[in-house]
Image (tube, rainbow, N blue to C red; front, side, top):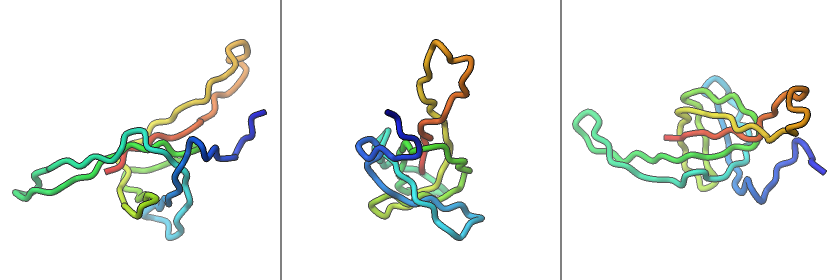
Length: 110
């Protein structure tokens, strides 16, 4: 039996917050790491800086915008750079009758 709108905490292990620059209220999100946090050296304005990057899978369909701020479970705050949707597998026999549903949103953070 599939329960909708119930987070599977075996997959989405971590709890963080998402905040849009135009919104004062932070929203709770559940996520897991698709690609773990990596650090890279960048040269910006003749200065070297360390730039963290990771990819997370967020439960459900969210309309992230570039520049939204996500605070991870360990307190690290990163900005959204891009998003992609992962759709739930449908029944192949009646696929043409059903609207595909978003299972998770994968987000690239920097």
